[in-house]
Each structure stands twice: as C-alpha cells, then as structure tokens.
Image (tube, rainbow, N blue to C red):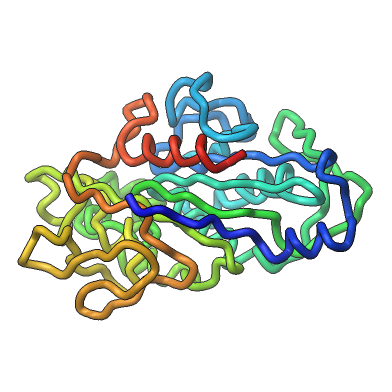
Length: 296
C-alpha cells in the first residue's frame, strides 16, 4: 500500500480565507455509496445493511447513501444528489467512499451535476432523505474532500458483457464495459481525487475477466485505466500481461489512468475479493480502515 498525501480543496482554502464560517460551525461527514444489489433503505442514512454492522467505525459522522443497486445509474442518481445536498453544502464537508457500481454512481454524479447550482441545506433530512433549505442561498457543486473507491466498477465488467449477471436488471446494461466507459466523462471529477483499491482474489469461474480480478471486476476497472474498453492488467509477478501501476502514472504499456484517479492499493498477494459479506470485508475493509484513519 503506498503512502498518500491527502489533497485539500482550493475551495476550502478560499472559504477559510474569506472568513465564511468559523471552524467550530462546520461539520464533516463520511458518505458510503453502495454498489450492485443494494441492501439499505433508500433515504435512511443510518441503514448500513449493505456494508456490515452499523456500529463499526467507518469515518467521521458516517452516513449510508442507499440506492437500489439494480436500476439504471441515471434513474437512482437523485438519491446520491439528495445526500450530497444534505451533508456537503454550506460549511459542511464530505469524505466519500464507494464500492463496485457505487464508483459508477459517484463518478456520474460529479461529471453530470458537479457544476450545477445546489441549495445550501440544513443537514436535517426528512424521512425520504431530503434536507430543507438553510436560508444561506446556493453554491456550485458540493464540498467533497476526496473519494475512496473499493473494487470500482467505473470501467464496467465483462461479467455484464456476457450475461453472467441477471440480464433483467437495468444496472447490468450500464455495467457493460463499453456502456460504463461511455456513460459520462470519467476524467471530469470536478478536480476531486479518486483513490482506487483493487483486489485480485479471483477464481476459475471469473476467467472471463481479463488480467487480475476480484471475481467481479478486473484491474482495468478497479484501477481506473482509461480507454473505451477494458484490457488485461496484472500484478508485477505476472509476466503475461501489463502491470497496473500504483499512483497516477501510466500503466505498463503506456495506457493512462483517468484524470484525478490514483491507485492506492494493488492486491499483489491476491488476498482480497469483491464482496463485503455483510461484514465490511474484501477491499471494502481496506477502504473502511482508510476512512477511519483519514476521514476526520
């Protein structure tokens, strides 16, 4: 695991210099965006069913941003925008963690809506997860410090391409590699950094996935490799495909990562698979610990 220097948004420095609010008035939150299959009740930010026990530490003021994990990204995206409006406007700031298709969801949100006008809210959600206006006006986009991504599916999965998942789920069509990569501009994160955590504990039945994989997504997706389709990327010990590199630099063979994406963890020992198992496991466990350490 490489050591990372956390990025501080220029906007934060501007706000502080302008004296918009005293530090004591600001609140930081940790938002968790689930992936495929969902599990938590939409609008209930205390429901961590998808992840594991809700009592487990997972960053400051943790909130579960629940969506159904089955519908099209565009159809469920309002739920993510509701959460960001609630907790990431005004003097409040957010750390975001995402798993699997949650990577596609938060990436889509920022690219498509990160430059829009947002109402500054009171951070007091109603039963539907919607917060009321604070009376402080509007702002452009959201206050996000950075995004941690476990087993990211922003580049799609070959399992969706070949129909290994239920084809009746609209989300599966979004997760096809060509569709996922064309769904939005992955380079447009509104300058928010995405820290990627890629697992490699694949199995024989995941042979359809190129290079190293975690049983559901290959390194090309979990490692934010750019391009219009997936490719085979591996650990340095594998001589038969190009290495996925740590950090922001180009991978072996010269293919770049998307802008503002960096690989924080590459599973060289092939220890981590895709699944949380309702216990914060897999690469989600590594991201959870990272959030505990840095999301304060």
